Image 1: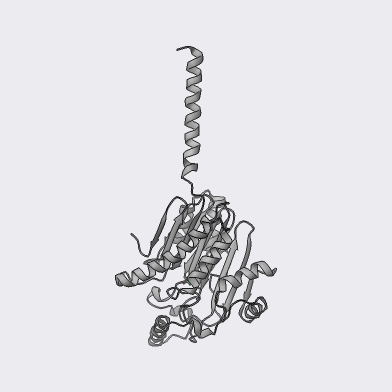
Image 2 (image 1 turned 30 degrees about the vertical axis):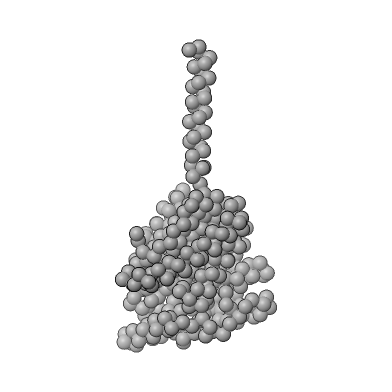
Length: 341
Ligand code: ASP
């Protein structure tokens, strides 16, 4: 073999190796990815197959809605809003219809949305008559110069922008009523004041729910949305982590995160933003960052998060018995789960 031919062949081999090294991880990368959650307060592991199946079907419906929109090329922020609306309308989850009751037997709803491509965000807290709080949060983001509207002011804004309204009792479900009664009975037995922070229900499954969605769209944009009725029997006027940007919901150009669990803990530890900061400044992968927060910073049974990064990596991490969740991407992944496999 001539020297020239040998050199040409070895350069070709080097180029081919370099191409494979760059191209294969790229080829494996999904063009879009989505994760949803329906809360860390799940059924018991011993719940009937039918009950578990009902929840799985509800999760699949929401995940499928998001998948179709992403395949059509919709933007991350449109998709997270649309998917959270589906979950809010579903009585199986603690957001919108089916939200938990506060200590007075009423519903006060919190929601937020964030577009990681622009850092625009909007949130509402303590709304009582807005059928889909996530859409009001989006309108706060788009039609005001503010980030968070609460209580009466948020209701007034809802009237101005004309979103769908319902009676507060429209959010009622028999299941949540029963859980409130149990929680109040438990508190009475313990002699603790209504809404006392120390009187969290003995069974953490009674405490939370919440729904959320994070997305990386075909154009690499990230977004997150989260909506909740909060904690069962919460003191009225209490606001959790869901509408607090960086605590229960966050998105930027690197990550999008939505949380569920003891809101006070998520606020204290700025959970959603801390995951982003570990990726941004700490050189951690999304999975390492989410694991560090959920298993290293939060306490057992505090809850969990779903998250996506700009490469479409998806993470669902929780330290509770289970977390209603679903993950899908353009590589054909489509899975829902409640407990560990
Ligand atoms: N994080 C919510 C809150 O504290 C509750 C939940 O996730 O279920 O309001």
